[in-house]
Image (cartoon, rainbow, N blue to C red; front, side, top):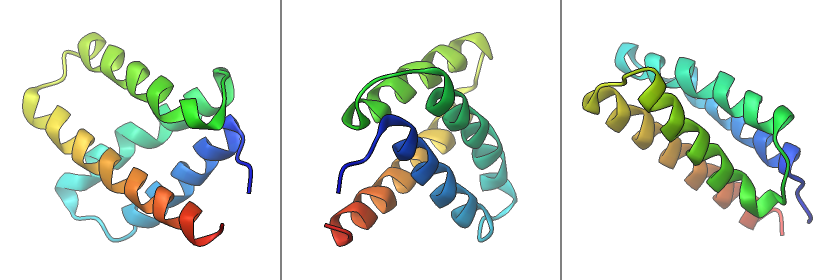
Length: 96
């Protein structure tokens, strides 16, 4: 199964929204931060599907600096992102 750059972003948004439904109050901030960022990259950047995660993370790191994000918030967002990536990768493996 071939995945496009945009499809990878859409997959991650779907996973993040599903995970958001089960999140506690602290995690909701991370989902609220990540979901719009994933959508922004998915529809406004280009590359191969395999590049999505790298392009996205570069965007997030720039946003962390721009938003003067605290180390605690960065850690929460990073953990949430890693969890979503693992779920997406597992989903892709199951579909091949």
